Every structure is written in C-alpha cells, then in structure tokens.
Image (cartoon, rainbow, N blue to C red):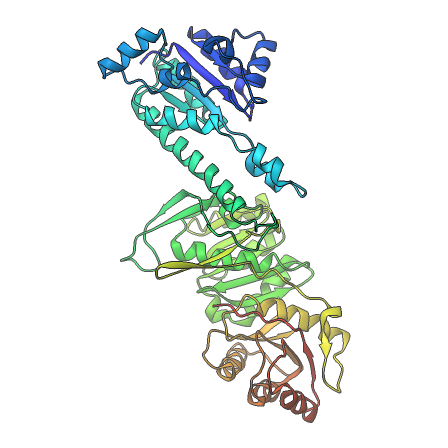
Length: 519
C-alpha cells in the first residue's frame, strides 16, 4: 500500500527530522501539529499544519488539535469497504496511511519530586492515544509508529519495498502501539488511584496495573514439565537484573534467572569487595575482603559442597586471578559489574558458563509482588540497612568494634537467607548458614553442622537471627556452637528471658528493632 499522507505529532522528537526527510524522498505529504510542525519547518522540510489541513484552528491551549473528522476518517477508513471510500470522496478527505505519534511525557512528569496534580493532569495526552488506537485498529491500511527506535525499520522497509510497508510489519507495529497506549493508561490509573481525597499520595493505588514485555522464552520453568518465559518490567530500575548483558554461555534458565537475581540483590548491598554464592535461592557463602579474589575464596570456603553448580555474584571487577580460581569449581553463572579481557579469555575456555555483566547501581522497584491463588500480594521492598547507631545493646557484655562490624555484616546476609535464618560470621566471612527451617533451633543446628562439614570453627563467631528468639533454647544452641555475640530484632514477650540467658553465658547481644523474614 503506497503511502501518500503521513501525520507526525511527537513529544519525543528524537530522530524525527531524519525520518521526515526520508518520507519526503518518497513523495509523502507530511501533516503535523504545533511544536513538531515548527521543528520540521525550521529544518527546511515541507509540512502542512493540521489546523490548515482541517480548516479548524487549534483551541483550548492546544488540547484540541487532531480531534477532527478529517483526521480520524482519513485514518480509520477501510479500502475494502466501498461506503468508506465513498464517504471520504464525498467529504474530500484523503487517506492517511502513516501515523507517527508518541505521547505527552506523563511518567516523566510525575517522576519529578514536586509534581503537582495539575501538572500531572496537563501531561495526560488525549488526541495522541486516540490517533494511535485508530491507526493500530486499521493496521491493514495504516502504519502506526510510536517508538523512535522503529524509525530505522520504517526507513529500511520503505527503501526495500519502494515506498510500501508490509502487512506483517504493520501488524507488528500495531501490537506495539496498543501495548504503548495500555501502558500509558496504566501509569495514569496507578497515579490517580494512589491519591486520597486530599490529593495526598497513598502507599498503594486502588488499582494496580502492571506492564511487562517479553524478554526471553525459556526452555522450561522450575521443572521440565512447566512452560516459562521471562518478562521485563518496562519501568525497570537501573542496576536490576533485567538489564544484564550476557557475554558468553548457554541461555539462562528459569532457575538461573531467579538464583542470579537473589545473588545480585545481595551482593549490591555491600560496600567492600564482596562475593555471594547462591544455590537454590539461598546464599551458601558470602564474604567481604580487600580483593575480589579473597572475597571469593572466603565465600567458597563457607560451604564448598553446596557451592557446586552455584551462582556467583561479585560487586567489583572480576580479574584474571579471580577467574582462574573460580574455574576450579563447577559454576552455572558468574555476574559482575565488569570482567577484564584477560578474565573473559580464561572463562571462554568453559563456554557453557553463563557470564553476565551489569553496572552496579542501587535502584529498587517500588513494589515487591508475590502471586497467590486469585490475587497478588504487594509490599514495598525490604531495602532497610542498619548502622551501629541503630543498635540497642541489651546485655552486660558489650560487643567489641570488630564484633560490631561482623554483626552488621551478618545482619545484611540474614536479610537474603530464607526464614528461619541463622547466620554465623567471623571477620567478614559467613562460617555457617541455616536456612528455610520451620524451627529456628533447627536452623541454628544446621548452620553448626554446615560449619563442621566445611572444617570451619564457630568459636568466637557472631550470629544473626532474622527474627527474635521466642525462647532461650535458640540462643543456647548458637552460644554452645561458639558464638560470642548475637544480633536479632528483639520484640518477643520473652526478651528478658533471652537477655538473661545471654548474660548468664557471658555473651554480647544487640537488638535491631526490625526483622527480615524472607519467604
């Protein structure tokens, strides 16, 4: 279908001049509005203002520009319906075969710190979505382009097909257009329903609309009989796993992605060079040290058996020495902010290892989601880290400065271990981790067994418990294992009993006032 008329009205003007120049080369008449028309005119491109085309001036401060039969009839008319063409001919309305529109920057407006409701409302586009939907609905005749990233596709296909866009491309662009307007309306709905009657922002909107785009079809889910796919949040925050770049290795599996996310979110929280090894969504070894290599060695030493086939995350560049050492074990995924060329060359010798890089940034999604039957649980993410000043020392024995450092380290680790979580640490290294047990006492015993199996001593260690000890028995177990300082939330009706047990055994204990359940 030869394009004779194109309507261009864009908020994001990236690349629009080059595209318009291409359209002119194919003899396409360009209609445009307001700022877009001025930009094209100033660039020396022949353009007809929509107000001149319709014979009706823009009004209401530009709120009404394209809402006119001469625009929408030209977009919506179907060639295969004779009465449509007869109506156009009678009204002297030409077909508009190409619509290039993107919308007012609503998301960008509400992201501003002091955006008012009035400002947000003014950034709700009306005419734009109407044109987009009309063109997408009539994709058999009309090409709709909403994303500047697709301008090159449009130009290339015009060249290959001598001024014609294929039906397959028109359908693909229509799919993208409907997704674009759905996402736009979702953002508006989420914003408006998050305001109370005084226009103050609530924690959660009354209607929560989520938009994800397919990023990867996966071979299967958690198990081979389950189908799976990976979708990327279109508002993905910097530093999130969805932005990874894969340097080598097999395609990531469902479990790879889930475990890598757990490792990456954990390693991001540490200020010193750190290594996190994850197996089945639980850390099996974490350490901080002066170098990436040393951090890895200490993390691996926590539980070498569980580290087999694990996910390894670093928060610093992986160098040649680190890569050489990591290759001595079987590993599924390595992720780091950067990997040196020498390290990449070494890792390439094991081409099945999935190697990912991702810039280290600390953005968080606004909500955490958990699907349940018939609904979804929504919460704000657990991003809270504590400092020494947040701690309440509740025992007669006070922790030393080294113990305080280790207690804070253990506390950060415990946040990423499935509840009930017990984490023994010493000098920036995990030395025993007990995870996911129904009994906190059992978690403590498992952590002790893990340390014993790895040949590590718990004598003089510190321990973190993600929630309070409901009885003294849990504390007794960790002290008997060798812990000399404990960090826990506090808040049990038996806190005094647990504190007395700590004093009785001459160990230090601090309360954080917050817990880190992770289910």
